[in-house]
Length: 126
Image 1 (cartoon, helix red, strand yellow):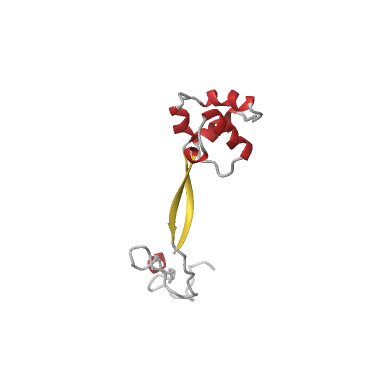
Image 2 (cartoon, one colour; image 1 turned 90 degrees about the horizontal axis):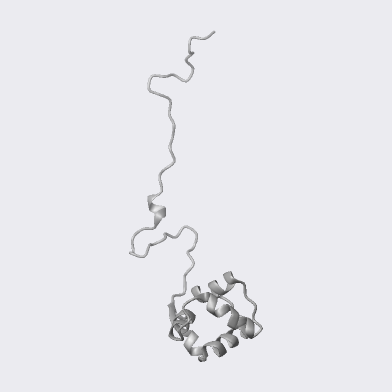
């Protein structure tokens, strides 16, 4: 098994511990430190987990909130399994160990003429 690291983002909690309950409280403090974020960017920074974070923004947050990086970003180990690729024609097993969706696919329909209807019969036209 491979070990991967993920993280939890605690900006909102750290802000609340410092008495800051609105994203609008943070924006002017960032601007004082040269970080100009739009209201929507500031909101996303507080309410969502950022995928990328500018180092200057991180340093400004640490300064504003008087905290350490570990207070904002908590590393979390994640257990990841190595996926095996199936060979062509190999059955897919689901998580419960049963057959995969391939076993439950409908069969192709075969349309036959109605019984008693000959292939060469005429429909009375002509």
